Length: 107
Length: 107
Image 1 (cartoon, chains in turn orange, green):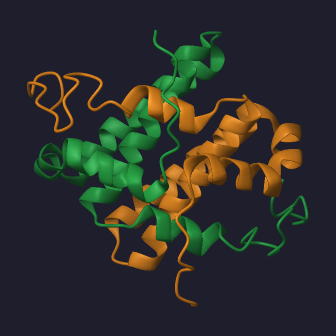
Image 2 (tube, chains in turn orange, cyan):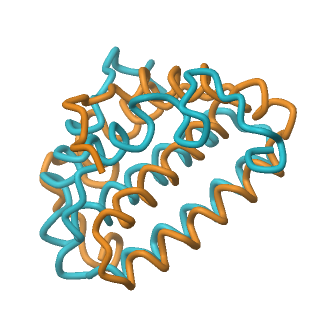
């Protein structure tokens, strides 16, 4: 397999990239069917986490994120804005950059 | 609620940010316990997708991505490299920027 291209997508670029590649099919399939694809990928991630194939494990993480971006496209949610809003200023619980939430709240 | 900060994390920055905030707790919890948290967030995303609260929906997407980044940190997978490798050159199935995979393979 070729080495990874030296690319670090931004979240917005990733979402746009997935939209360009797949939006027509994604919109036709709709949110319920797309959510089932996400669940299939989550299952594959679970399997990969229990195994020893690092390349496959990386691929399953990529697939789960791609299907999340797909669903976000179908329901028109801006992932970059969502992440910046929730996590851009530190832990949403304690507001600290390094989380100090008590273990009963964030174990 | 305050408007979103105008931040577009890169995938690598997001993973680093989550690591700084949570790695100590994440490593102590381990992959199995962290996967269960991810599943809880997936359930909340499913609920939000069926509802009408757009702000909550955005938040649930952010949470799922954050927990994915957390698991990637625990198992030391580079999400940016994983995404670039799998999706950086177009659809992994047909290799085209706009997917033309037949519907039986990628419906």
